[in-house]
Image (cartoon, rainbow over the protein chains, first blue to last red):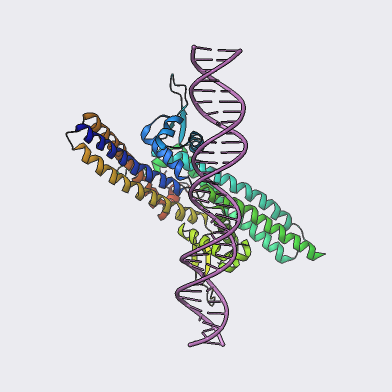
Amino acid sequence: MADFHEEKARETIDHAKELVIDSLAETMDLYGVTRSAGTLYGTMYFEGDMTLDQMRDELGMSKPSMSTGVRKLQDFNVVKKTFKKGERKHTYVAERDFFKFFSNFFSKKWDREAALNLESIRHAQKELLELSSQEKLPEEVREEAKSVYTILEESKPYYYWLQRLSASVKSGEIFDLIPFYPEEQDKNE
Amino acid sequence: MADFHEEKARETIDHAKELVIDSLAETMDLYGVTRSAGTLYGTMYFEGDMTLDQMRDELGMSKPSMSTGVRKLQDFNVVKKTFKKGERKHTYVAERDFFKFFSNFFSKKWDREAALNLESIRHAQKELLELSSQEKLPEEVREEAKSVYTILEESKPYYYWLQRLSASVKSGEIFDLIPFYPEEQDKNE
DNA sequence: AAGAACGTTAATTATTTTTTTAACAAACTG
DNA sequence: CAGTTTGTTAAAAAAATAATTAACGTTCTT
């Protein structure tokens, strides 16, 4: 009888976890992480260190799926390989501090966004500049080239800002500017 | 002969735009926006107000695709419907200020993340609390329930922080904390 | 050194997502 | 008010993504 209750209780705990795992997965889906990777993350979040085999058992999926899922999460900087003494299988651990999750995840994305777009802007402006110097071209075309050049130039401050935001998030400075707890007033105010 | 040069020049301008449109699309892909929606955004970014037919012509895709693409971008808060006098067709405009793009896009996502997870945590904790009060259960199970409850409780500050970050981004306060231009020193420093 | 355990890669299959064509509904025009 | 034009919804086709099984290479064990 106690076993029956105990069994039901364990199911309830698992259900509670699943509720949260699902919403974590949906959350990550918002940012373009697939639901299954999100579910894997959520599972690791509650479970702690896991081997690929444990993940397979827990999620009822194939091992290669776990392997690729883990790598994807590593790419997002939210899962790390751990070294567990005397354990032959590789173990992985999910970042359980959501502040660090946020830092790792977004600083990576933002850095990439800035690098990617600044690079394409650089190339585009180079081409446009060559046009502007060709005096044979009709004024209208040169104006158009100049105009696009300017639009691109004016977008640069955003990417520089994004890089600073990323740095602020990486360094933790952002948590001074916007503190964890509201009562933790900004010292500078 | 001038026409030839002019034609080539226009192609070069288009190519320059495409370079940037592609990287904008890749950027948006980073955050889970499909490449085609990203390309549509990029096109609108350079083009300004556009009708669905113009988009179709520009991208060489079907009109329903444009319709759904535009709606998706509207859902992300980065495209708005515009009212153009004497124009029967609907027109849409992309947010060209990347700071506003950032604000609109991420505040929406972050608000949703917080709401979603706080809600699931609420439900999960309710279930766990009921277990904790059942004194018949083995100590071990009650401990487990309590432990999961605590983990969830401790994650809440993150979501509250995320809501404040979102508010800060929505209000523009973030741009005081992390200024557009580095030389624009924080007044409070 | 041979065999087993483990993880990854490759190829195939399955599933999901996206795109298109076709049908429809609403709003405008004369 | 009949006929267009415009935009969206629905159904079908196409394309892209994800998952599985099978094969492989590496490392550990004995």
